[in-house]
Amino acid sequence: KIQTGGASTLQSGRTIAITRGVNLDRSDFSNQNLKGVAFQQSIVRDANFKNSNLFSASFFDATLDGSDFENCDMSQVNFEMAQLNRANFKNAVVKEAYVGGTTLFEGVKSIENSDWSETYLRADQKKYLCAHPTAKGTNPTTGADTRESL
Image 1 (tube, helix red, strand yellow):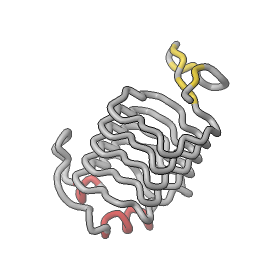
Image 2 (cartoon, one colour):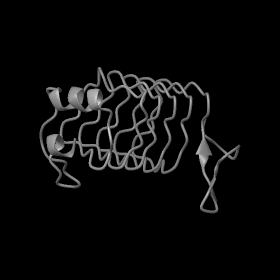
Image 3 (cartoon, helix red, strand yellow):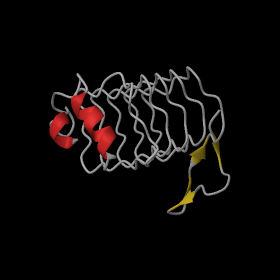
């Protein structure tokens, strides 16, 4: 399901994997190194990404409803226009993520123990996440307090 090559996949002299427009519902991507993989415009509902390295991955315009990102490194991920209803970010590192104006976090399952440092959220999304009942705890990887990182 994951292919290499295609337009705009050359970054720093390396080819990255792309899944543009692919239906990846209920896929198991757990415990994998998916650094830089582009899941752009893909349907990735109820997928398992637990314990994976997603550093600089792109979820541009992707449907991620119900996907599990527990214990993932999601630093510098692109979430522009992504749908994240029921997504689980427990223990995730979401530092310096790119979040466009249309990205909505409403309906996320959990952000407990997650680190959102240097991720600039739209005011209404920041308010929503700060008020989320799971906006608590300390990230086990970075030591950042979840609420303070928002």
